[in-house]
Image (cartoon, rainbow, N blue to C red; front, side, top):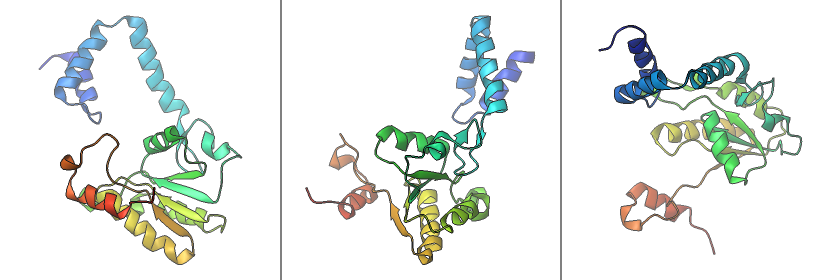
Length: 197
């Protein structure tokens, strides 16, 4: 639609997840009208993230050194590992302040339609970590969708013979939600996961 550099920028922005053609166009024109110092800071941040950020050699969370801050923290329990799909899931759990164990980031979920099987995830590395005998519980915190459930089921089958307790995050009704708007699966899980008060 446009020519040269502006169209190239729109095309590149459109490749980002969650950025459609209209959003890409809006962002491109924002960049075009932005102060050059702001644009340089953005470009510098993009370069830095590619140069400095890597994956933790232990849990595969994002890190700027060999290990992430969670794996370096000696106060955290090594007996409990929480398995998540992506590094952003670590951030979500850390915000709760409830979990004091370690993590393992799979790098996605089993999705045969997308050609993602167990060999495409960091399951082998997880099994190596579990083989040390130090871990007592594995918490499966994959997304509560078809792919996340398939991944959790696969991991449970793989890990149970090792004698490690395998648990799954409870799922159910959100705080502030109305029962009448809950789907049957969510409401069913809320009943299954009910607890004494």
